[in-house]
Image 1: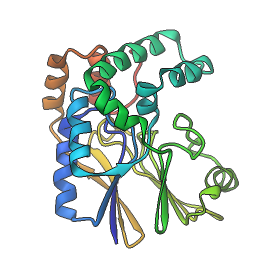
Image 2: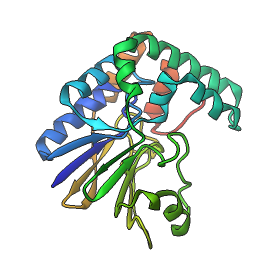
Image 3: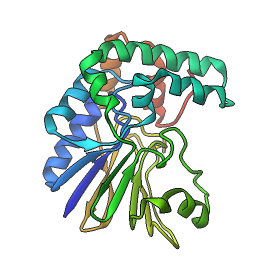
Length: 241
């Protein structure tokens, strides 16, 4: 069985369309999403509508949760060392995205589960317990087993950090995979990223897309924080507002 997992699209319709074309060439039996679908990009409505139309199942990401449960953002922000200006910008973008999606799409996001299990693997956005907190990159095997072992799956797939990786672990899961980000790469590579599992063998696929087209769409969409998102797209790295 061939399974594709896309995550962290963040409303980037240009990147999404490029990845969708690549997925169609790969012809997987199943496509799942890892959350963080709409917030922060030029096409939040279009992304949700396309995924609904394609019938892709998946899990809730932290920005999805933020859109439908604003208190989750406030709880996380209250424990964060990041400057208040960052959270003010996040709130402003979330408010505009929430208004753009309208209730029918928000209701669908509200029903997304935290965990999706398939034969041979499990999918979460960050961890089984939280959409907001993923383990640090240098976490030990023992720490990762404590976090993900309860899923009881030999392979666990997650996103959230916008940095793809494939790591073998002594214990369970035996394989921990970060599928990276479709729409907002943080690893210095501007290409979109997604995971293809072919009979359990993982590969991270990187897909080029027209970033300048997405930057133009951002500039004209009226989204608060569009310049901030643009900085991150240009640098393929996290930036302050």
